[in-house]
Image 1 (spheres, rainbow, N blue to C red):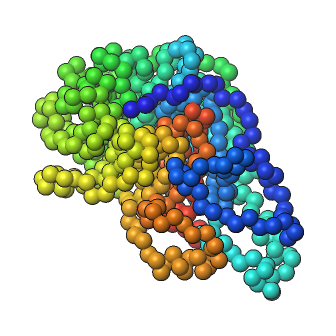
Image 2: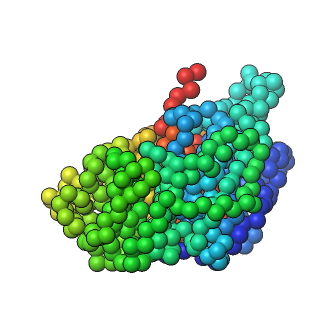
Image 3: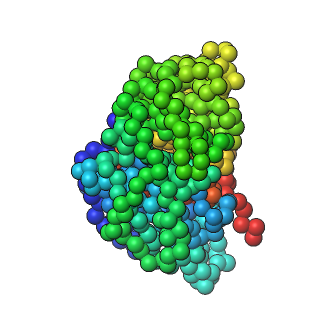
Length: 474
């Protein structure tokens, strides 16, 4: 799996808006260009052509960076409430950098506030041409509704940096105690940190941007050197507070058991069941003793920590490296896996005894899958990122419905015929980031996804998955 970010360079602040006259009005004398669906990985841009984002496709879309690219990040659970639906939003993060020199790296603890957006209608309202009773006043009010809700100005980034020697391969915040974070370093060390002072400072600060010029030198709570190589697999148990598992590129997995709020006992004898690098692992969302792991050897292993250091079961999952996995927290019998060949599969553990766990297999992406994650709010929805610079969102409960498609086209007077070979489960394709590495859904803001890539972070809320959002009640 290609994990490192190609030619990391420190990001420069720039306006990522469209180059073609944002907000410019159109004239009836200008000829209308027939729109067409552009298929990533199939169509090529002709000379002079460029892709532009359609803002109507998003309830919210913002981009930012913290300096050096980040291979991994995590969303930190906060005390602002669950199922938040009103803009503006605030989000807390931890992320690890991939700097050119080992001594330039850091872990960023940061808050992005004033995240504006607008809940858009799936079917656009009638224009004045369609409704002769619509006068100029009502048309102007519609225009004003295009303004984003709940905020003025751009999102505000407040950043605190903690020195970290070497690149951060992966970082995870504990769900139950989100100020406690674990990080994998390319030096082969796993460290556990207490970032409570930084998170508290961010929570108490005003909305003036903090650019993080000061780097804090903070000692980790634990610095484990027992792995024989660097690694990427790391996960906190959502069931047992403080329980952690870490896997390395030498096929070893170590179990961490908490002995207090700030100390851990790491079992020196590893779990071994793969014949190659352990790429990812996930604890069960319901069982305290079970976790799964995936490997470059193409297999997925299921472990029970009560019955020894070998897998309870193992099966071939892909014909290439299995890069990432995600255990569905809404339907605990389901596991998603993403491969180096661009495919991803859905597995049902109830079919283990039958010898084939795959219930769905998708070949949409043409390059390695770099991240995969189930929605924390919808059991059938998941998001996937790939080295083809696409972030895709899927709803596995959908099937092709020709009558529904015809009705939608009639409502929107749609003239574009969508490609016939697109899977009906494909809900959304997000582009615009280079070398996508990781994504996460926000567990407290339904419909929000954050992604990291070589050129920074995106916060996005696609408008066509608003069915997963709580209703306005208005």
